[in-house]
Length: 220
Image (cartoon, rainbow, N blue to C red; front, side, top):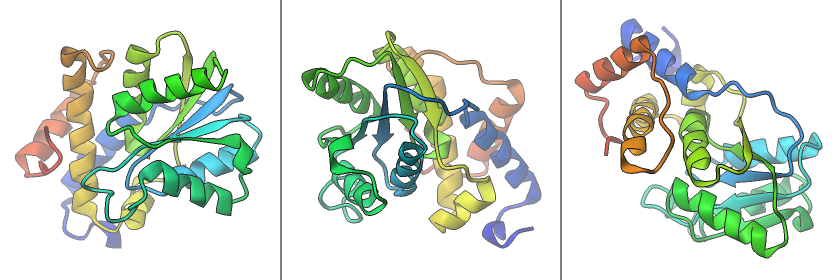
């Protein structure tokens, strides 16, 4: 068992990997009109956005996100502001970046960014959503519900689960977050927040088992 998961059983890790793989949309990165870097605790989103910009996949990007209880201490000026600063350090030109500093959830990330782009005269038909790896599916479902007119391509840092756990430094927190996001994928369509998506039986069984094992801190 790898160093990053010493406190988990092999069976728990196998189930976590099933959930992780389900969250990844598997989209091929390709040129789009605009990219949206979704704010979070994970500065790797800004890194991934900068890398994709330097590959010439979009001319304009938006960082979106204010603060949440989990990011206020790390990003006191707000997620989007800190993401922008990191992207500038990575060589993204200031004129390519727009900042939406007020969103406090994924739905607001989408709607407030859409409004910001419209106010700047940018009306995209293709949008790349750049997020934490395990947030790809939920961000896709949210955008398809709230902005159905655009084609969505999802992207994130190209990390294996082991490497992501190492980058965060807390295996249990990562599993809690994976389980919490899958709950939102399942529940949010019923609340009108996202489109419904099929959850394979083995993924759903893994999710239920991880909940039974106590990986519950991020459940709604």
